[in-house]
Length: 236
Image (cartoon, rainbow, N blue to C red; front, side, top):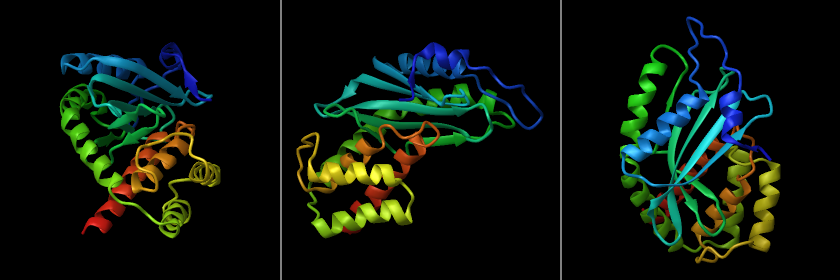
């Protein structure tokens, strides 16, 4: 719904710089990210872009083919805004092969920077250094995946977790709630761990695939944090 070609992001009109607001061009972010990935030894498999209809908020996602296993691949993403509504965010996550769902690390794999002060000078070095850590983040997410697969959850616990994401945490809206309910009843994919915490996590990220570009990155980070906190409660 919100997917666009790279050129659309580059062509979006850049707002004027002020004393308190320093925009970062989408085209600059694209170039910096691609150069940093190549410089870090990563091989690009896919680049995907989404943007709001007015061009004010954009996301870029880059799947890496040489940091992967048989189930998922490393994915690096960013979110940028031209209307001062969102800080520049960068995150490391994974793309699940079977369903193209995204899992975005929120505890150690994300940074944000407001469009003020030195953001234009901060971005190039930060992105390069950040991407260098991507391999370690990916390995940690592999460990989390396998741990979640080990824990079966009852129908009652599943319902409680979904309810908390909807009512308490605001991770999902009613649209995603209905999608998750449908996926629980009739899954579109086999995630190799039926009835597990991992399967519910994947139902959730499946429901978040088409979320509005302003919410995509934040929603995925919140979901990742939510399921890892639940995993910690189970294991400790």
